Image 1 (tube, chains in turn purple, cyan):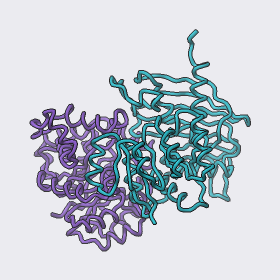
Image 2 (cartoon, one colour):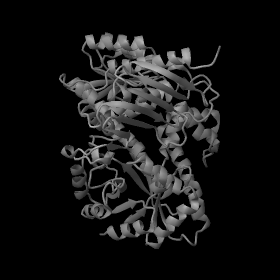
Image 3 (cartoon, each protein chain N blue to C red):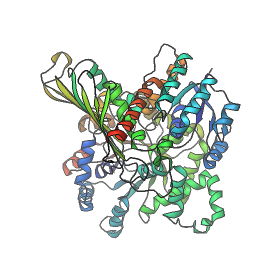
Image 4 (cartoon, chains in turn blue, purple):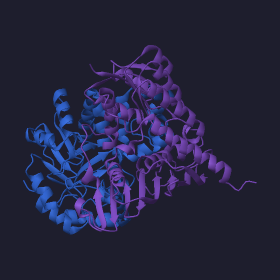
Length: 291
Length: 346
């Protein structure tokens, strides 16, 4: 399955800007109302975009509810969720530690479908010993937000992908990809800031048909180990094995759009995820992404 | 031959450091110590070549790696570092370094005497924006410093926890001053220098029962510089922890956070390409890519620097036990000042 060439991202809605706290704060303020978010989504769909990437953060539930409630209006929109919302876990872990946090998420605040029977006390201990079962349950909790939507790819956030990449454990990546394919009938996706290393590992491990989403920009910002390795890894890539999706193409606004996409269009990249908050920028970006 | 690394404590920071250091081509993680059975089981299952111990005592009885990363609650740092020194092991220790100034000074002395690499995780010293700001300040771009403010905000504690946690006890290294205030103080020591006197300290509880959630203090210097510290770990308006530093000098001022800085100059400096008025720089202007990214360039840069210092004796460490002892000294002085002058108790 080929992924969409142009995907509309979500950073602009949630006060995320890697370059400036101030810019992030003012963005967060301007999207306080969900209707403001949908005004921008509608601009994107008018510009011809049919694909949405959305992180499973606190506001994603409300956004997805509106999409579900307006099925006919948003017919044919394809979904590229990313999970989890890392700060939800990070903040809780800071407050109480890793294990109490997982306990809360798995057993207090949620009832995962199909796991109700396992919540008997004795079973909890078994789950703790099985990292993969634990991961599957966490995926299910995060994916509840996107139920009933046409999900094409499920992405693991870069903080998790790259943490696991550092551990260098094949089984976890295999298990993630297999679970996403079987349970959700979607393509597994991995977001990373270490694309050349990740792609190399997946090849070595024989894990194919994975979508790799990664920072890709002319400045080499958030591209480890360096821009040259990225260009080389992309140019020698076989998209039948790994479709590449570029993010941070403007390096948080440091590169003018024309210049940024001239560079991106020269790369062997299958897809671009971008965020913008004005109709003008959305239309401009759509026209600049070619190929 | 690869450097053999041990990791003591696999909580949130330990796990992050494990991932980063494991990517270094010159090292091999050989052993860990961690009391939580969930983590121990996973290590035993997925890292068959790594020895896993339930406590650091067993670790030191059985292991003698070249270096260790210490990422336990801070109350254990001193005892673990002493054990490591006995066995001539290089140490990277998370912040806050110790809970007592004298422990910090003792460890700095021992590691210096034994010429063991010693580093503390004041990670802002490896952030490209703060490093650039330090260079500009040292080069006199804003002239002599007159005033500054160092702030840190996070949403670490946002409600009262009923159960007792280590963050809610000074004996275990909890409280906003140890946890985030230490970063804001270290940044002052790194860029401006260590203050000579602490005054006007105020420690405020917001949600915590036993420790402060917010801190204010004034730093005074014999050369007439003065500045303020303002930290709050119950600040829900910030999505991520942030350090802010504003430095006012006779020729201009700098306002910086981890993501960028603005430089205001009273007069232009054409020889270094700065105009009069505001000059803005973002992290994208000053970043250097790291070999492997997990949580920000600075986290990788600090651990790779630790390994560089072990491999090359001519590289001097950027954040030593001695530096951390200076930060600890200021923390102690803030507590003392608060206890003497900070309350209205009769």
